[in-house]
Length: 380
Ligand code: COS
Image (tube, rainbow, N blue to C red; front, side, top):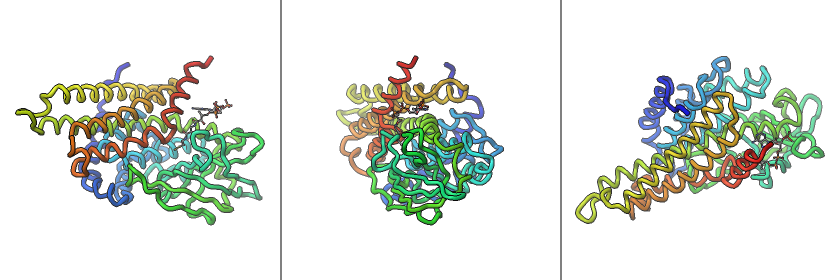
């Protein structure tokens, strides 16, 4: 497979790198401490086309391919994985799902502002009792006149307190199991929406995660995506692409950990030389580089398959599985290379470790990725 980047892909990658270094890096340490949401940064990302990268220009998107999107998320996450996930949810979950299944009316009303960064979206599937087993939705949507009335609870909602609209799954017919799940676009300012407190997380602290209560929320009937009963299919298909975004985020963290380790090892002196001359450190760097390269090949392949209309469910899960492992392993090893300095906030590697762990959990745990891969392998 050819991964030579086109001129356009290189330009997008470089623009993302430039933006990350000049606009994101200066506040990333402070935001990790305070958990402040990067409102201004997200606004600028929207103006540059990074919030609706793969959406067609017809719907105010940037019309780019998935590989460009992966390169951009990777560069942004190399500097700040919190910003990476904010972007990823808006791009590959909310905008993607709306463009694929939304009516012209919904695209005009919500996709255009979401893709151009004038609105922010959140994806609401998980519930207190429906995480990995996402079929167990308890949130209900009952038709009443020209509306549905929604009641229930969602949790782990990335962008939850900041979003303008929620891409939300709810049961329209409990008797049908997962075939009774439907997807709705719900405005945050709808009466009955109760936005919970921001979670106090170990990592990606500047991103925003909360619970969401729905108490008799009236949602117009035209805000359903497609028709009743296809919500689980929509959620699963959307997550297939979302997993490529999280994999790219993990790749960014892994690469940042590796690069920080190379830099430090060339500066730090011990035993009459820099520690980069010690075989113990060289072996760590070699292992880190190998895992970053292996993961990037899988993630880029998943993106290319998606762009070329080839199957990518297995590839996306493999990419996420390996890239998230690379992020966790490389960030831990980066701390070891830095010794005591790696354990304090003065160097960034302790944040990389805290940020990395979630990539093995959200948008499908590593165990769920293995399940998806095995099912795809055994199909037919
Ligand atoms: N892409 C498209 N469709 C999918 C799919 C996928 N990756 N996985 C399942 N489906 C479809 C199936 O084809 C089936 O539809 P049909 O009956 O029309 O064929 C339907 O969904 C149910 O599938 P299945 O019977 O396999 O459901 P299970 O409950 O056994 O397993 C898993 C589904 C566990 C794979 C799914 O629930 C999952 O991915 N869970 C993790 C959810 C997640 O990522 N949560 C994080 C939330 S976002 S932070």
